[in-house]
Length: 355
Image (tube, rainbow, N blue to C red; front, side):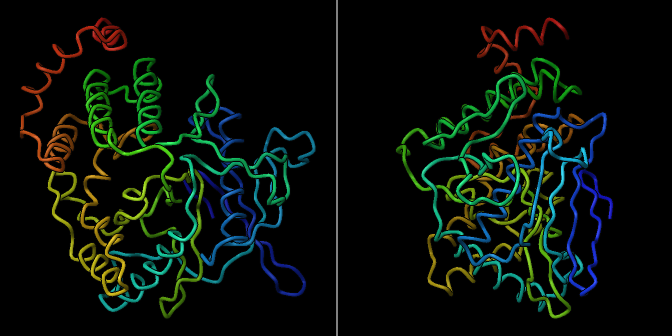
C-alpha cells in the first residue's frame, strides 16, 4: 500500500500471523535525512509509549531503525509493527448511527489521554538507535534543520512562540510559503501576536496532552461493526495544551464553511461535546465548544500551507479574526496597517525587498 509519505508491505508468517512493514518514502521533496530520522524516532516512541502506558488501541511495535543507522542493512527507515484487522474510517460516508458509535469510543479515548498528562510541550523521541526500550524515551519538540530540536517547552506561550518564530524564518528564507511570502509572513506574524495574548496569563508548568496531528478519520481503523480496533499514523505527534488536545477532530469540521471563514460548529462537533457532558466531563466539552479558538491560530501554518491563493488566505484571516471577536477587517485594509506596524521587522523588510 503506497501513500503520500509511507509505503506499507504486509508480512504473513507460516502460522498466519501478520505484521506490517512501514517504510518512509524518500523523494526530492522529502525533508533532509536528519529530519526523517527524527520523525521515525518520534513515531516509534509515541506508539511504544501508548502501548505501555495507556489503553488506547495502537499497533504493537516489534522493531524499527533509522536510515542513518549503520547497522540498518535495509538502508531505509522502517517500523515493523502488528497488523490490525480493520479498515480506515471514512467519516463522510458513515451513517449517523455509525458516527454515534465511533464518537462514543472517541470520547473514551480522549478521556484516556486526559489521564496521562505531561509537564512540557514536545514530542516523544527515542534516544536509542533502534529496538523498543521504553526507558529510552526523551521529550522534546519539533525539529528544524540547522537548529535541531526546539524544546521541550514549559508553557504554551513559550512553545507556540518558538514554533511560529521558526515558521517566520522559514518563510523569510524561502523554505516554505513561496506563493505569497509577504502575505503569509504577515499572517504568521499576526498569529504570533494572537497566541502571545492568548497565553500571556497562563502560568508555566501546566499539563499537556498528546494530540494526533492528522485526525481526518483515516487514522482510525474500524471493523465491520464500527468498533475502533486501532489508532495509527502517530508521526509528528506532540503534546499540546488542553484546549488544543481536546478540540474537535478535523474530520468533523464543516470544511467548506471553515475555509470560507465561518466558525459555527457542525452537527457532529456539537454531538461530540454533548457526549462529553453525558460522561460528566464538562471541561472537555468546553474544549470542543471553543474549538475554533484553538484551531484557527495554528491552522495551515508551517510546511504544508493552505495559502495557495489570496482568496483562501483572506477567508482564513477573516475566520481567525472572528474566532477571537476582533474587528472584522478586509485583508487589503489590514495589510496596509500591518506593514506600517511591523515596518522595522528585518525579516519582513528582506521579503519586501525581494518582492
